[in-house]
Image (tube, rainbow, N blue to C red):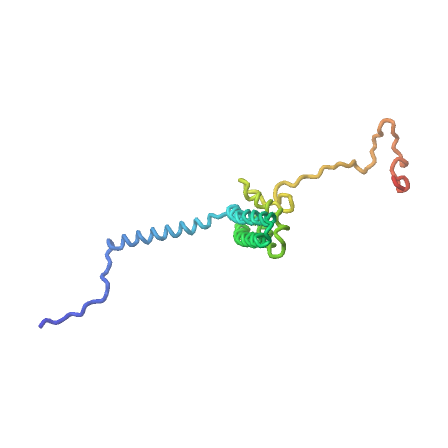
Length: 187
């Protein structure tokens, strides 16, 4: 009889030619995964704010319908759905704020839904989402005024309080022409 040799349980060694397809497949998977990861980073604050405002607009629409609905059960259901839409908008607004702090007013307004009625937030939400819908990247509106941009310089509408050294024709300046408490109107 012939001696029986034990069967090796080791895998055969891969040659360089055998490794090339695996390396190419691994590189393709790595590139695909990397591109997906980087595409997720492409969401800037404005894009996220606009996504949040889709939910805000749906909420405002439901809320308006609830105000017009004569059936109290349907109206209550619409208010509940409107609140749910605002709750869906909040994480998006928080992400928008993280990406760009100018969206903090939108996030803060949405955080108020648990403490305030939607009726108290409608105006602010409309203004902030209108700003997000604009094609340019300006800051949202807070309190009815933009939060960024040049501050208008006040113009003086009152005359200087220093006495004039040039007399007006037909008028001689002296101490008696300046009002005193006793000569002010109503006294």
